[in-house]
Image (cartoon, rainbow, N blue to C red; front, side, top):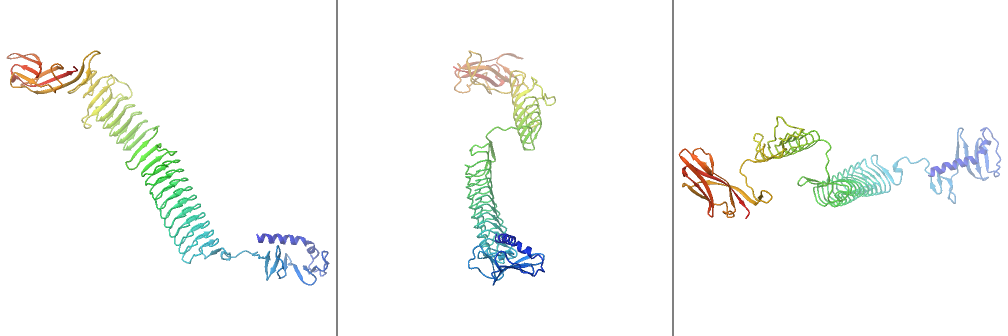
Length: 547
């Protein structure tokens, strides 16, 4: 500023007396030029212009051939206000020396210094810096004030890295950034009060006002955004991106929060929060929140402890989806689990080793196969219908619609229940030809036949060995049965020689007529059979009706 003022002064001064220079353009002119301003105050001799008071020379303008120069007489005015004057060869203005030529080195400044490697600019910057430190840059009041052996640090801003003694490779930009750091290294702090309290924590990155402000010895943290990880003191391996993210974390580790206020109250470890205010009320550990509010029921919630995930909304899959290990999904199908193949158009399978081939089929279990259009199978190793000529896209009345498989392996396939597209139902049969077929023993309870029929409570089968005589009394199945509510649906005896089962009633053999009959008695079911040696076992289907 002083230099600019001096230049302006010279221009104005030169313009004011330009007429005098015009008079003496010829340097051989020896005549004195009478001043029209004041008698004897100005003289021009051999091209120079001199200002005097008649006795003393006050100011001289010299002709240097191709340029001019101004010479001030030595002296200090009694009043220096707004005056330019010469003191011992140094120009002064307003009582202050003008350093017109500028400084030649940083050390010429009163508030700056350099040792050839480090540079400090600002009051008390690098005050305690020694020859043991190098490659430091400090700009600002009290920056790197305590630095002793720390090297390759950069501090820019009021009191940044003020307490650093031996820490290296730190960057602090912003007032009070990394102010308390002593011997920690590899930290980056950008923003007002960022990493302000850090003393020994290393490898931290804080960008934003008060980011990681309270951190003391926490390590390997990243905080981007105003007050992100604000209260973290010794937590490590945390990443917070967004204003106020992970703001109240103190010692929690391995947390990740992306979004404004995300995870702001967490105190735990291993959490992931993504979205505006996601998980801002969560205080536990190992949680996943993906949400754009502070809802406790986020769109996606996960628990890393038991590897569970919850979707609080609808899940849409626009094309093929294979989730799990070694799954194949084709033609807009979904395959979930292990080693499944969903090849039918819009088919779905979940479980292990399943195969869906028919259009819009489904298989849920293990080793299941659905070859026919719209078939559904659950369980394991179902029969699956005809795989040689499958009706992949056509409705066929004899094809399975629903199967519950109960096979043991691929070579031993069977169904516990089969429902065909024509309405036939098979229990223990995969190809029922009637509306209802049962392969094996069955038991019915609480069954009513007809609109006005008596309720059937139970139908069971009882078996046993006949006595050695011609008469056998079989006890009722339990105390709820008696001769009034019991009905015999069938009674058969087994022949000794042929192992054939013979029904009650008339029977003719080679030796004569035989009779088999029964009666319901209070003591049980009485069976009469001639020639006891001819039969050895019985089986009875008995029904109990409601009283």
